[in-house]
Amino acid sequence: MKIKVIINPKLEDDVVLECREMTPQIEKLIKNLETQSIHASHRGKDISINLNDICFFETEDDAVYAHTARDSFRTHYRLYELESSLPSSFMRASKSTIVNLNQIDSIERNITSSRSVQFYGSHKITYVSRMYFQQIKKRLKEESI
Image (cartoon, rainbow, N blue to C red):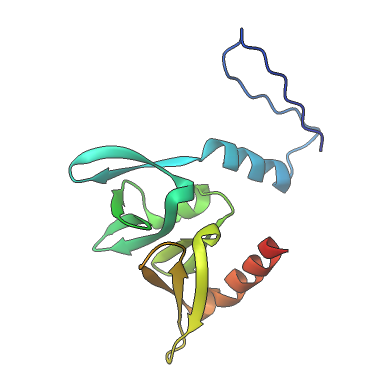
């Protein structure tokens, strides 16, 4: 795939992708271009959060919260909606959680079958179920190469 960027200060920002056919690689590129922030509520205000700042999404009492290193924000989405629209750096970790692979500092084995996930610069912890652990482990290895 060739990528060409032509900068012209006289034009408005516009991105055009020309391709022979739609491939998974191009679909991933489009998804990453389109989804760079998410809208949420915090203390009665609607705000926009950069996806790179989000450690994980979690359902709690019929609402989905986006957790950053220091705070949490109520989103206006369902978990399945987020899962289908987030960039590939986000993966399902359990029935109620989606994690940002780029924010994972470590994964520790628990006495139970789940594993606890710690994030860079955060005291927050979430869990990966047995069902999703191998997929996450594989993706973390792929991204570290």
